[in-house]
Length: 464
Length: 99
Image (cartoon, rainbow over all chains, first blue to last red; front, side, top):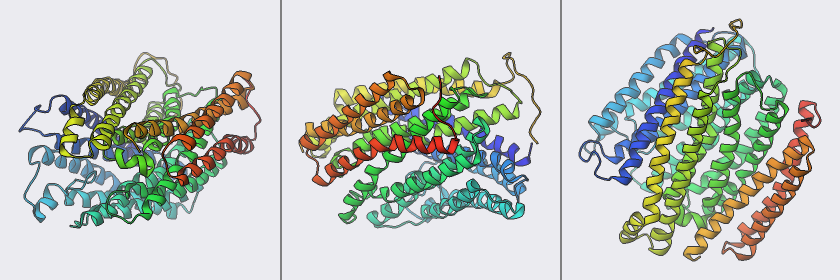
């Protein structure tokens, strides 16, 4: 096994651990809606929520990096350049995440000055990490870029997937620099902040997961390089074609010019179309292999990614993307429902699929199957669907009672929060969150013990 | 737009995409396995998708431009599965899959 692949295992293990932190803090955040006095004066809702959404970003990022460090040496036939630096930075990254989490929990907030920005919290959603830690993220991502690009140059080998990956790494690193400016004009601040949040999630991450899925398809199903590369090019063109200007749907109500209503609505409305092609492709691949592979959990999670992306991004997103609907729905639990479903479908399922693939290779298991992954798969997906369904009901109630009927006044906000449909929705979200947490626990058990349990496995030669 | 129109229009828009997905799924299954049940399901789902689109166009209080975009999208949705599948079969060098 390459050193890069050993590092990949560490990154994926850290990602799965942070997935757990995200799950627990999400459960905690959902419980505050049922019992607002919970941990009052000790740990407030805002801190639990920060931990929930920041660990979401970090666990997925670590999962992506783990996947690339796993596939890269096989793809280019050599150890990545500067892998020693990446190994050091992995521990620095983990330590930084732990320190930031402790600061969030213990210190929580500070005065409105530069020291707070540098040491406690940058105050911008999704990228709250203090400036020193944000600089650390830039360093980690820069080294990651150096590992990939340097290896291509050193190996004098270029493949289609790696070319797409290299081009994608530039905006991936550059857009994160947008986390730093502290602009006092809120419209301007949000304008640029959305470049980071939207263009990371709906452009650079989409391309990155596209590359990872292309590698996974080749290893898991033996799909030919020609096929996955041609699809990757099409996906990149379609996703970027609709996704970049789909950014406009975040500009509807933040003080930007009116033309964003048309641009954002138009390109966002086109976003489900490439996802339809993805559904056709997934069904075709599953059909040609009769849903059989040596690694069934990896195959099922990969298929779930295509359908989850379509449902979460396509169906849930389309409900609220046109400006006339979005006027009432933005910022409600309806958006939260869409966000949960889309992140789950587009990214989380893909990372879990890669984790299973890596476990199979590292433990030399000829077959990966058994009962545990099915329980985990069912509990995680049912839990997630239950959560997004409950959030949808709660969000629709908010849009109806608070926004459309009440006109977004404080009294209307309270009426929305006290509405029985909203309360039931938030309670059910917590209940399904518990189911999701059980699914996570089984997933961890399965990943830790696969190939070590009594399930019969046949040893095969280790990869180089 | 009234309060009720808001929820009804949003749900119709979601259903519009969901039925498009159902059509794409069953169209692919029908093309791969040549089963009449899938073909019937694909036709039914696209017809329902068309009905929902018509409902949005004639009833929902959306701006005319969005309604025209939905018409264009419905035509694209009709073509996407067949074009995608043809391309997949060409790149894989296979025809349909037997059961």
